[in-house]
Image (tube, rainbow, N blue to C red; front, side, top):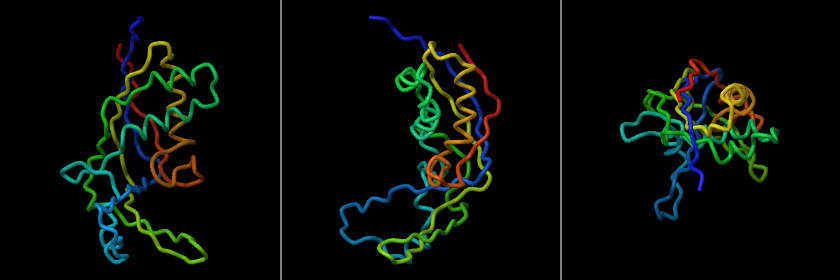
Amino acid sequence: MNKKEYYRVKFDIVGATPLVFNKYLPSNGNPRQPSVQYLEENFHLKAHTDKKGIMQIPGPSIRNCIYASFLNNRKYKNLVRDGLLCVKDFVSLGVRAKKAERFTMVLMTNRIAVKRNYPMLKNWRGKVELLVDEKIPSSVLEEHIRQAGIFQGLLHMRPAVNGPCGRFEVRNYRVEK
């Protein structure tokens, strides 16, 4: 059996547009949903955070963003699907969820307007580290990561779902063998 060889890619992502979070809030077995007032006051609970309350982006979200930019590339699509891994489970943004701004959106459900609040970061940045199959050229990967930041985006209301948020720029791209 052939052992796969990988190389590491490290880069910084810097927000070009605000980042909006929408983490699922489990009911913990409670059949009653939290009150509207509770959710309005505690909108920051919808952000992905660590135990200290620092906001973070899930690693699979970054991986899926990059993979989506390869969907029209027949040559590398399957290689990227199987040979791209985000080293850390979460990419820290270094900002506490309590400092997030409120992003309010009105949704139409069954002809009724419902106001929803989400945590939003206007200025954000993080350090990403990937393990990449050696069959994927680093120049091709870099180009697609940059395209993913422009056309795919991250998290809630990203460009891939016709939203204006979650775009990012790639800085300090470097490859380590």
